[in-house]
Image (cartoon, rainbow, N blue to C red; front, side):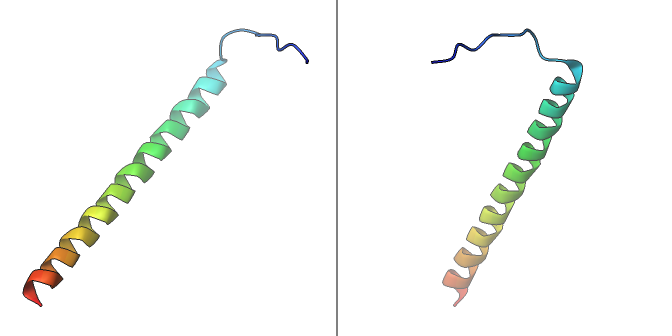
Length: 50
C-alpha cells in the first residue's frame, strides 16, 4: 500500500476555486429549494381549489 505524503496548505488558487465551487453549490441548492416550494404550493392550491 502506497503511503500518501501531505504536501502542505492549499494554494491561493485552490482556495479561490473551492470558494467559487461552494458559491455555485449554494445557488443550486437554493434554486432546488425554490422549485420544490413553488411546486408544493401549486399542488396545494390545485388540490384545494379543484
